[in-house]
Image (cartoon, rainbow, N blue to C red; front, side, top):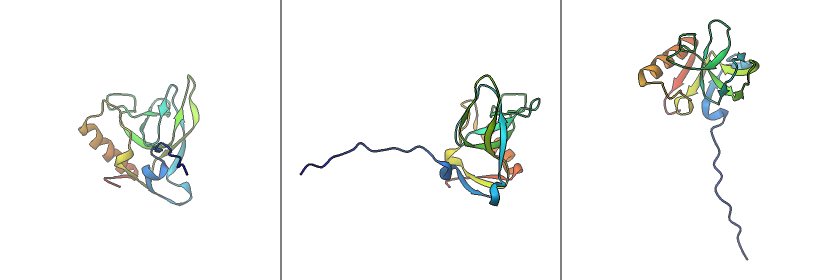
Length: 130
């Protein structure tokens, strides 16, 4: 009798890896408008553009609001030249795992510490090793 072997399957992070605790009745989540030309993945830190109120990838070197952490993406979304009202972001009363947060390459350790403090001020706690 021959045994069939299959290559291992590697699964990427899922919502349970990123989001460890949230308030009942989806209170922790907001449906937000995502700025044009964004590719936001699960666990990505986002900022809110002051002028438009749209969410975009966190950028610690920006000066338009994106330099302030405003939430964590829990449903991946890609936008084209138009903004999309279909973003889902955790913005309050939640706990997320630091292991699965997605940071921009330009984020230094100091930027990360500041962003974690900004999230904490919103009620989004970042737990190490969770």
